[in-house]
Length: 316
Image 1 (cartoon, rainbow, N blue to C red):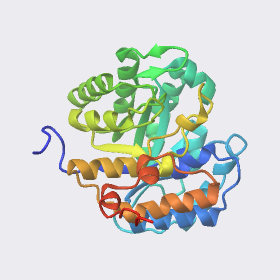
Image 2 (image 1 turned 45 degrees about the vertical axis):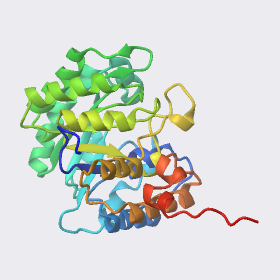
Image 3 (image 1 turned 180 degrees about the vertical axis):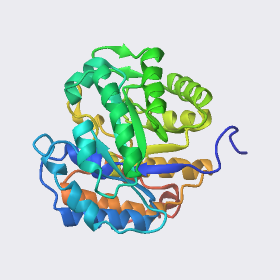
């Protein structure tokens, strides 16, 4: 029996090369990052957040954005996305051949100040200018509403704070918006309501969610977001990354592991176009390059098929 109100397919966006690797202090070579992109494409991933245009002194791991974009395979159906933390970053990204440019605007002012050095109001002023820049460059603008539901040192974020960022995104000409579960403490009920409200108010926007898994709710949040009308989900290989400067144990602060989201969708009969077996090779290579083991359940516990094919040990 199928579960009602779920889509037949969903887009999964890989953010490990940006949101994942930004948490790794040891420098990963550009050629190794490009290798990961090839592996992702081979596994069937079609939307890749490949680079960030943060200042190289702030994130030296991601300082090779221009070089990566010059070396990625340009294949039909593959969408490359880069993140710009501010107007200056967007100007740097303008000539790199991106398909999409992501701009992060926090619904919580304190997080905005600490993460980007600008208030939410200042970021919204920048957003209008970035909208003009992306339009002239022929790049699709995607706006990330950070801390869309919950913020550290605050708690629940008011819907008015969330919706004013979404409204500014629409005014700036964004083609897509995603609501980010940045803290990892978001709960399914609030995510369902928030996604459903934005879907109803802005039916023209391509609407996604970015998932973290501090409280273990990422699969539940993915499920209710799809039921509420989200058209894409975001995660990273091995659950790598996340806002590691937030309070808490770093081992639970990462992004939702994309392999767990793939596995979840398979169990729900939702098509992703991604081969889980091939995707697990990406996770294994990530571990080799970074020394970070995957935090995902499917990496540690195996798949349903693997358990079904297991054999009891022979009696001694």
